[in-house]
Length: 251
Image (cartoon, rainbow, N blue to C red):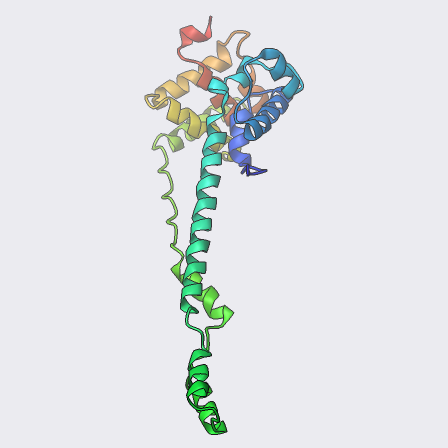
């Protein structure tokens, strides 16, 4: 049976879609839902438009290489592994509980009655008192919990050493334009993290040059007043992520 729902991470979603229009975000969500149910999205443009409820732009389609969103498929695998681990733990716990109750407690009493057709009340009482009581349901639950293997939490991913310097340069630059900037929000952090991963060789000097470029020299493809208008670190990172070189961005 296919799982009816998948995990949704708001910070990651905002960081990954902040450069899309509202219509593109709606199309993106509908295509994610279709992939979760059907496995992948179709390649036919007409079918894609019907599923998305609108035309699908290249920016949205680029998030589904080969018809599949990689992040969504990783969530599917995580769900499957989690269910299998819980299923196995439950089966092992049930097996151990039944094995601990495999010897019926009435057999000694039955054997005594068979050997002596008229046992005295005291002898029956002695048999019942010496017989150990079965474990209670609470004991079983505690035992199962102690036997269930504890999964280790993954170690947090180390922060890129360039992050603080990049944020400091952005704050200095944006405040030089007369705009107050406090600290990065969730969307800013998510988009900056993505940018640092994709551009491992970008230096603080490169970062400063990019900020000046998209503010003062960008053509119609990138809004010249972008920083002045919104002061959004997430949006700036998304735009810079698309620039390979200054020469490429002018094409």
